[in-house]
Image (cartoon, rainbow, N blue to C red):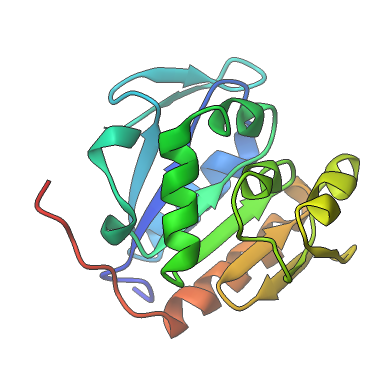
Length: 182
C-alpha cells in the first residue's frame, strides 16, 4: 500500500459535492492512508447537495495540523460553510504553514481564500470563483490540476483522477505527520 502510515483529513460540511468527498476518501483508503472525516462537530451527519450523508469521525476542535499529512477540501456549497468556522480555517492555515499537503477542488479554494495559502502561488478552481482566488493572491491557471509545492488544486469532478494522482505524489514526497495524543 503506497500511502501506508499517511493520515488524511477530509473536511465535511453541509451541501458538499458527493464525488469530491467520496472519491478522495476511497482512493486514499485503498492506498493505505488513514482517513478522518472532520466536520464542525464529531459524529454528526452532514448532507451533500443531493442529501447523501457524510458522518464526521472527529469534530474540528478534536484535531490539529500535527495529526495529518494532508487536508482535502471538497467543493459544492460546503466551502461557504467551512470558511465560517475559525477552527476550520485555522486547521487549513496551520497545515499550509507547516508545509503539509493542502488539496482543494472546485469551490474548495474558497476556504484557501480565507487563509494566506494562495498568496504568491499558482492555483486553479471552478471558474466561478476565479476572481476570488486571484484576489486572494494566487496566479490563476485553467488546468485540470495545479501543484505549487504543498498546494494542490483542481477545477471540477472531472479532474478527480489527476487531482488524486497529484495528491499521492505530493504525499510520497512529504514527511509523515506526528500523531497527537489528544
